Length: 512
Picture 1: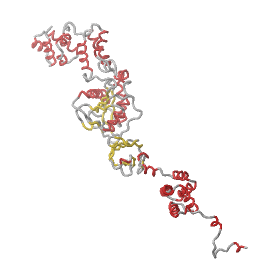
Picture 2: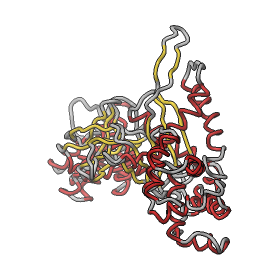
Picture 3: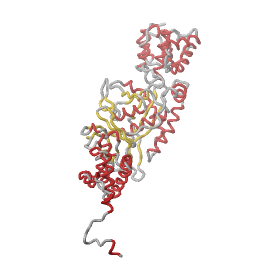
Picture 4: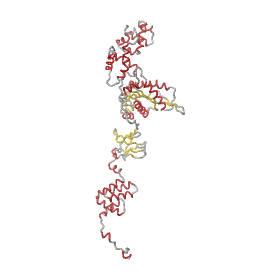
């Protein structure tokens, strides 16, 4: 057996495209021996850099007994066969490599020791896992991004080609893939595509990892980026955390970039030569090929993305909310003197508590609701009404005096009069019937009823009774009666029966 330094030299020269004769002349090793080491190197399917990083002892174990046979030992085959199941099991909470090594050793007592077991697993991961250093737990993260190469739509009438965006998403644990085409990377398209991904997977992960595109992040920062307010609100609706990929950290998004390459190879290549005239037609085709990608076994594994998802991740995801997210817009306005804000898009007014009159507030509105915030506190929420120049008012928002005026009605004043006396009720009804405009009548009624505070209940009843006799129905007649004391004047029986003497009165004898 040659030294490990000599072996490294042979492998380095071979990877530099040097011939066996040249290598033999440089190292002094026979060409047949070099041929055997090269055969072992090919069989291992590892790069020179990977092998060169191994200690001499491990390198010797891989090459020391290969001169007689280039076949992979049975012990190595057993180890490699164990890794796909191990890779899946590590996604479970609480599972460790040491526990899995114990299981492996129980099945194969003559198997590799723990150190060699871990080194072999890392080497296996390098060949079949996009990012060997990131272990993704079930239900933990969904990675999302837009692809660089864009599909195209063809206008039926003009034949003009228009590029559209290609959105991709992948669950970290099962690596279940989702993709769709959308018109742009703007917020509404980006959030709709992200929401469609969650509904395709039937649940919500603990976090969504996005690239630092403008639709997700307002201000990039290596340590604490500022999230786009709408995208953050989307995360709140689905009870998940938004985690922008760290700047200058390519491994944060290596998984989704890897799946973009897969989608290029498996979807783009299959769609080559086809022309699509609508986004719906394009997405129908993408979904067809997407199903194949998720259903086929992953490279180096004996299971598919879909199988691993159904077995390990589907039940771990959080449930979807009952309602889909409503895209929201924002504006800042000033509360006007009547305690309302105007949503300019609809020209409709919404109330806020009267103490915020004159304050600047933020209005966040969707298709169905209008929310109003002062600083960080929500001070009002209303159903969205699109009737222009209309008012939507909550009684609790009004000052006590304004609230009372807002509650005026004919029934209110009639009930108040009835509570005092039937004559007062009757007089109020006459006032309401006479006035042409309801607000004018309400003010008269309010004035009439308010006199009880000055003169008392008895005088008001008598004043209303006297006014009914006069046949005049307004606030002024009540005021006059009370000021002149006519409510207290009582006619005597003789005054009612005797007729006054007058030259124009003929008397009862005239008719005999």
